[in-house]
Amino acid sequence: MQEYRFKFYLNALHSILINGKMGDSHPHTWEITVDVFKQNNGFISFSEVEQPVEQLFKPFQGQNMNDIAPFDALNPTLENVAKYFQSELETIFVSGGFMLARIEVAETPARSFIIDIKHTEGLGIVLPEAAASAAVIHQQTDALIKERLDKMSAGKANGQEAGDVNEGAKDIESEQEVEADVKQADAEQKKKGVRLPLIIGGIFLTAALLVGIWMLITYRR
Image (cartoon, rainbow, N blue to C red; front, side):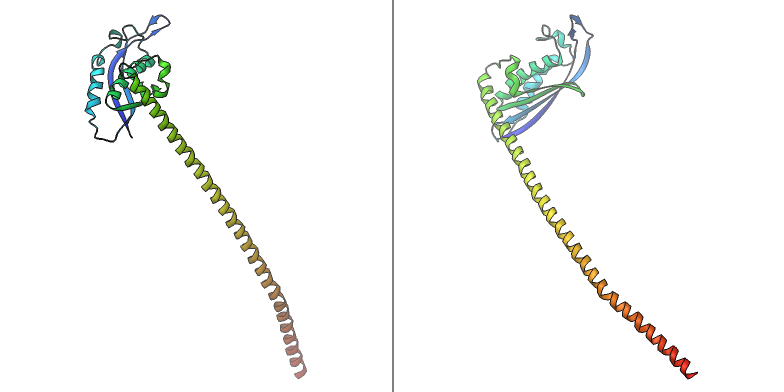
């Protein structure tokens, strides 16, 4: 199964009815992003889905959405626009052998509305002639998402185990370093213990020689 992302752009105006008052008409460059899965790995002719999508958007290009069905009766909010195009786009992609996983509709770069295919049951949308295929696709998508989540969880668990092993190895290395430092300190101390008597003996020997020389000089005089 192969995953694809399509992006489409629609230049259209709309005005929103808020609290019984119609707002000013204003333009947007709508960005519609669609994530889909291909049910087989054969050759894909993108124009087979892109051309029908462009035909879907054509009546709205450069127009006021409020003048075009269904938005002549439906308030063209960002959410309603996304829900309408989700229904129409799913029909197109299902007929082309794709399963729709996600759609994101943005009216500005900073504002978008997202629909996940797992949540479409709550939208009150029935797909024309494609409902049976869409139901099967929903099941396949659920299984695929679960498989991905399981792999991610397994990867995290393996990473944690590897981290534990690394921490254990670091602890052993630290203990070994401490032990080596202790041994080195002991060796240095032993060396100092051997050197001290030698140094003291050398001092006494030097002093005795100096006294002997002094006495010899004094006796000759």
